[in-house]
Length: 149
Image (cartoon, rainbow, N blue to C red; front, side, top):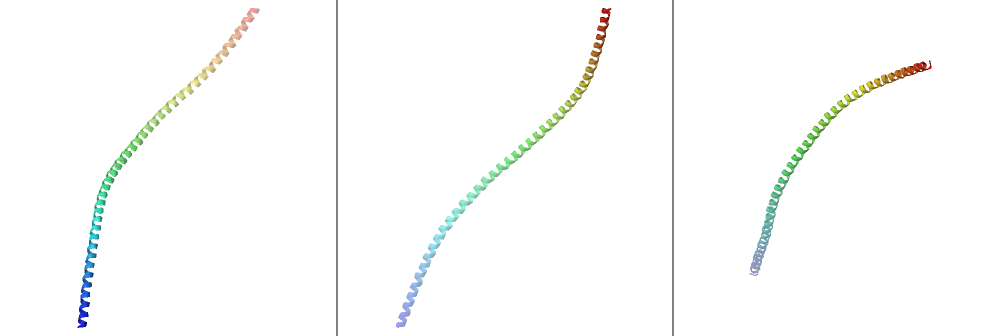
């Protein structure tokens, strides 16, 4: 009976230890479950907030990207217009230079022709004046001779 009593005491001690371990495990499981649930809820809220932030950032970036694309297209168009205007201006200036060069060449030819013409006239005039001087001198000598006679 002593053995039975001891066996009964061991069994009671074991049962009470098992209940204590089970109670402790259950309490730990509840604490872990509460911690998990609160952590899960906090993470879910953070996830939802980040999802909203991401959607907002995507919308902002989309708007910004669209604005920048429009600005890029506008700037490219403006640059093309400036290049086109520059090309037109340069073509016009080139035609103007060509026209002025042609006028210059014509006027230069005319000037050279006139210089040659007036150079010949000057030579002829000098020759005429020289001939008239010779005649005048001859006439003066002749008159001087007539006066002395």
